[in-house]
Image (tube, rainbow, N blue to C red; front, side, top):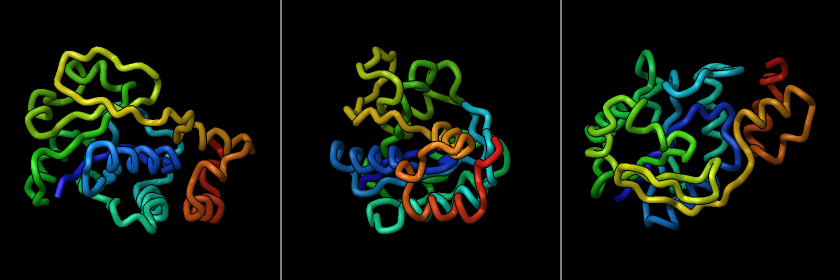
Length: 192
């Protein structure tokens, strides 16, 4: 089995996450995409975080019905900052898979990969880097081995969803029905 890893805060998970995961499966012939929710992301400050249990519940609701997708909660179980290298080591011990896993990173984080990520050289030994379009329609020139996925550039983010909820804008079509129900039931992101 070949696997790809898609990490993030998923605060909340939205349609862009699902579309990207589906494109990864088709483009690179992976069998499964593991969604890895971060406990404390190292590259961004959590905003309006409803807590790890609630983010995990929303991710479960998002992935309902997708047999090719699974959740790996190892970062939520580890205390402290969620470093990718620690996750890769844990996944390598826990799973049996063919070749290296694909590690998906956004082109917003890719230029600083070698400078700000913890142990980037080790990450490159453990995983094949897949760079997804988030901010740039064109491919960036990067000084490390990677593959680009020519994914659909969808202008939706968790930040946008949270802001639309807080400002009473249209947001329901940006998340799965299960996530919509959780957000409405618990009144999430009303005051961010």
